[in-house]
Length: 359
Image (cartoon, rainbow, N blue to C red):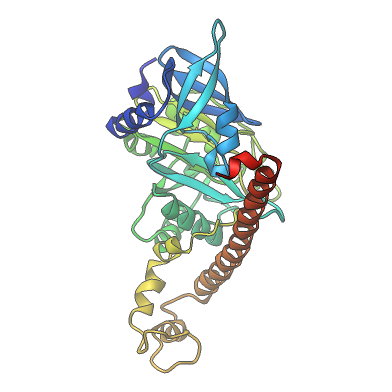
């Protein structure tokens, strides 16, 4: 296996050298996680692909979800003697991390993909197009450290694609927007060209927007199974059921992800302004630096709302996301404090059982 074809570069090599220097001797290999399933991982190495698990010491030291491997990770893996299986001893530092709040009431982070250069934000040009969802995708993409690219699908079925293109450009300020058709092939070459040079891209979008069809158009028919959308509401059926890393014949790799209709941001407020650059720029023009953008005189945001330069629904979405992230930050800070307290309780309990360890 040629690891360079899967995204291995000098950054990962340098981190490998530093990580290995701090480890005990062993027959370690560099590998990339191509598939994850219930804390078991498919890891691709120069010697083949091994079904792997994390070592006991690794699991003991891991504290939160992002401490464990995810699809796209480069890891230090050791082959089990005589088996096509491996043991993961460490995760190399990441170049990017794309995550969301786990679905439901649980306050937990769900990793979508890591070590991604580009995030394709995929939406179809039909009734399933959702401006507010695209705003969320963009904020999460900027927070990940990857470059967001908006891909609008099903151009062959759309009578007026320019309407969707214009709306997407008005939201994704500064990001590239492509309209493509996986049926006719229009726009596929432009999207594929972005991955030359061993780049890694993740596909993000809800069910039925054409992610699997896009993978087939880029990688070759039959790579992924596809299903149609429901005719009554244009909503899709789940085709991809797990995250998987796929090599592109022309160079680069794709990480396909299951459709996500519910997408809540994780607690990183710094990237909110990057997804709403227009509002951020307006805020700098307010008369007062601590303007609350409500009834203060000289508020540039209120003036833009009144003139129609700033759509009310876009600003309402911005405020809603601010509140959502603030809520998550309060919850996660509380959870972190509880986890720290519980950790020291365990340490104290252990010291009482083993007095010699107090020294």
